[in-house]
Image 1 (cartoon, one colour):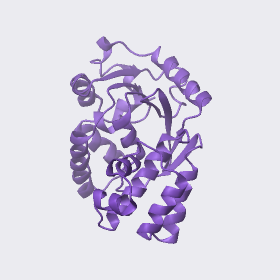
Image 2: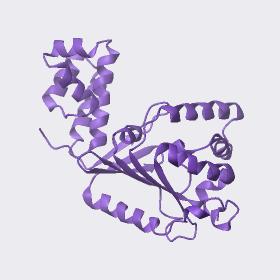
Image 3: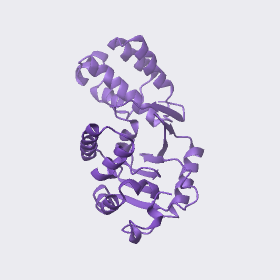
Image 4: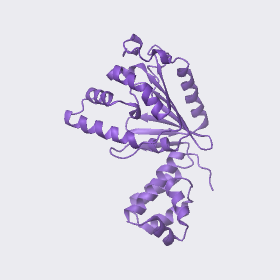
Length: 267
């Protein structure tokens, strides 16, 4: 079996294969029998646990009679498996591959300079950033409810470290700061604040480093309506070094309640 270099591409491929089957109303066991493969094997292809060979993918798509455009898209995903860089186009209303990496990761490191990550947001904070972004009032209540519901069912990496830029707390600093301790304990996450005066804190864009089974590392970079996933070793090491440099500047836990301190204010 070909060594997989891009876990995000494999997850995108597996999701597409599962969607192609379910769109036809076929159950997993029934479809596995039709293909002549064990149900466990088909399941491993559809969950990203195993990489199917290209002729297997072509056979599945042909059997399901997917459209030519969908056939080309899924085959393109297969050819991305050996690429160290994968770009996901974010589509409103659909789950991002980052959520799947959250579920698979044994550990993650996140730098959030501008906005508190959604799983850590209080309703007051979510409401404040939606108002800041000029979201329609009628849509704010709906969006707050949706995000809170998503947080309840979202799985988190077993070990997670989040560095928050001081500016990220500005929209609702008091309520968000008071909630951080309890949230951290509940989600088993280590949260630290990086002062605005830290070198690079104002210019370094947000990123997340995921470690999955077998010490496989992937860096996720948000860029407008895309997320760029990179697994190239040199790039991963560069971002791990950047994270460590920020981590050396964090504020002690004892400072977390000082919500009125100038170091928390937006520059």
